[in-house]
Length: 507
Image (cartoon, rainbow, N blue to C red; front, top):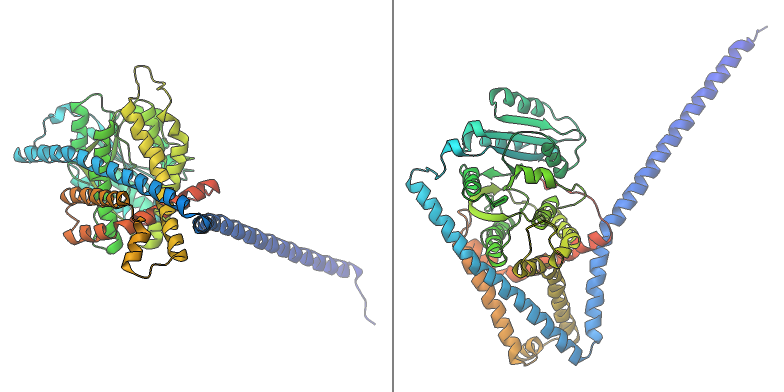
């Protein structure tokens, strides 16, 4: 006869119920995790694809409107687009011509100092204290940061008792042994500081943390981690501050040094030469104001601490530059303050970078467009008509040009669809409507383009070969269209409140 122990049976039943409860809880947790993942993925997909659908709808709607428009209305739009694009091209070449003086002055000043065996006008003892800030997002730049730190320690020519190199970085997870290696360098080099910013999620957070420190620096220079400042670059910037006490910001020239990596980096390098050697100094001469451009920029430290960076902005550098202008700060561009940087080597990296810039620009333009008509709130400062017109060109006309270029493209596509030319003569009639003024506007646009690129050719960096400028010239209309499309994507992202930050990969 078998005896059943009721107490043992009770505990066995209890254990089974407990085990089943645990399994149920695990199943519920897994299900909730899967649901959360599915919702997050769907949300990310909607956020990623909404701007694309908005831009695609814009093109489809525009082309359809022109297809059903009357011939008279089409002609009106044609001339409006052609004339405004001609104006933009003309303004660009005038900007380029205005940059020639700055280029020759910089070249003359460099030759004078080189002739004196790189002896600068201001004695070392009279130089102000300089902080160089290297801002890094470590997971993205872990492969290059040690190289950049050693470069700065070994190559920068500036009095060591007045120089401090600050590596300000953030990382979501520890990266060892890299972080320890960086900290160990501070024991060998007393003018090096390595600071990990806890809780930082952006470049703005890192710079703002630096602004909370009392470093005793008179000037603070901001560099992205991929930059190699020219050994004499910081000295040239500090000479500008020493020679003109009214200067608050010195923005240097950024040069792409991996131009020969592929055809895309070659075109980006040409574009950077056009922007930093031609457009920026030309605009400063034409409209009497300069701008901080994000890297290779030198600030008087009290001004940087006062304005700081706005972490809510995608391009916090442009926002801070416009806030500095509104504050009455005097920013200048110096072509001898050179820094070398990397261009994205893949189309994906380039696309992500430019979409972030495009959205950041429209974001900053919307916030600061009132600078065009509003009065300065700083006592003793006023904005001239020339400066206001420059802001109009920078914040409004430049952003509007994306629509002018793409609308012109939509108009051409609609005409080709409805009335495809069968001969060269028909194509000519289609293109210019037999109006001589359209032909002259076209010639002026092409002449302006060639004039701008001719000046760019003569101010190009040592990494640009002649054939790169030739390809850049031939493909420039296509690049304009691509830039306009990316501008539209930036606008669509802003409208759809797209707020993802995609860092540019570094290698």
